[in-house]
Image 1 (spheres, helix red, strand yellow):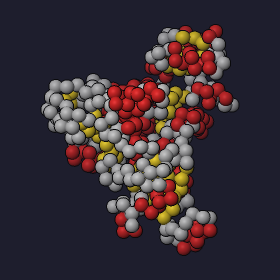
Image 2 (image 1 turned 90 degrees about the vertical axis):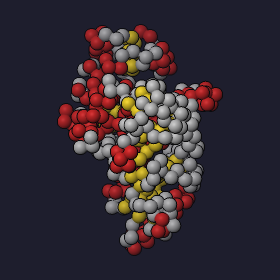
Image 3 (image 1 turned 120 degrees about the horizontal axis):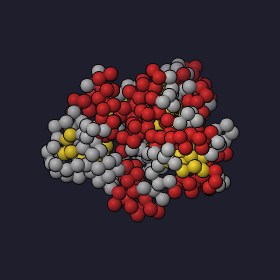
Image 4 (image 1 turned 180 degrees about the vertical axis):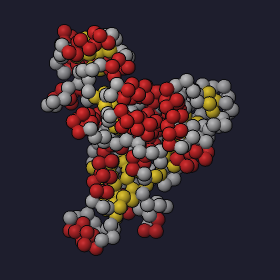
Length: 400
């Protein structure tokens, strides 16, 4: 993202927080920034002075950035729920627009963060480039034209391996220059579940079944399979979020419908098929390369790409191995739990533990592999900010 903003007009990445300062220093150097142009500090006064003098800032303290008057927009990109909550909370309190490349935080406490930002007068938004943001643009296009949205979704480039761990992914991760824990979170389905939940909470669409179908459907057949059962598809209802492990990735799609004969005639003329179901497809999402679009829209227009309007779907933690009473579990992508999307009503009835509250929690009684973490067998870490924010969100929305 720094490389992209470096080549853009009117937008510049001036400050980077990283627990390993050598990483942003190396990135700045790659873009032609000399060492003399960079201030490395955790001191707020020195940091503000450096930015006002036109220097770049590198800090180990992410919570320093929201306090700096010289910065307009912050991007949170750790994927760690607690860190995301802290950075977003502090950004909003300091009236800084906040762009979340951290959908894990959004699906946990995004409703509260959005409402907080709206009251204070800044923008809280997910990022363009992440699949939920790109899907939302397709959804808005379709609904603005009056089409019915049958299914909104994304491609996944491999089947889910629920029991992937950092150790089982290590060789592939090193080959792809990835963090093994992050790759495990992709493989065990967590990332896909989180992305679907973000789409759901922004649009009101729902997962048709827990975990979604995840069928192997190639692009030409999306509007033949991801449609209602009465018309030969697999969906038991209209208005769903889904993913396909067929030849769709890295694209995203929306299946739309109309029963207007003239529109159907025109759609056929435009080579969209005979209907009544049609596929709108974007063959790419460019991840952080597209994030500056959300940054600019927040700063210039005060607009959000995507945010959780309500908790329609919940991502719930499931035991990745046999968990024993007394154990403290790790984080997302670790060896202890994977995550699955449910409707909020299903998750609430089962008293499932939201994914974003599972890290560092304690197992109260043995949980067999594949079983849900619930209020009966698991206790979240109540000392975290994200836990406290979730309590406030539940009270605010009546979900408690």
